[in-house]
Length: 105
Image (cartoon, rainbow, N blue to C red):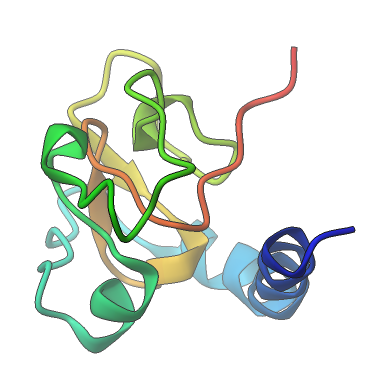
């Protein structure tokens, strides 16, 4: 397993347990996470996946965005939705961060 995959896996493990409970409590209309938020900066979050720095994140593919990420808790047609990595805030369905994991199936 590569370091990046291990890091992503550990991030999911750490955040997963507590974030599931927190995300269920979030109401519709939660504020969008700002790209300047400390957690967003650390994960390279961009609200528009076309603005991702490909030199810094060479693994990013044009087809990757929050809307098709396994962590995205919105519906397919939603413009934004909850993400356990940003408790209490929503991410843009067109956004992207380095913790991106494709939805299964």
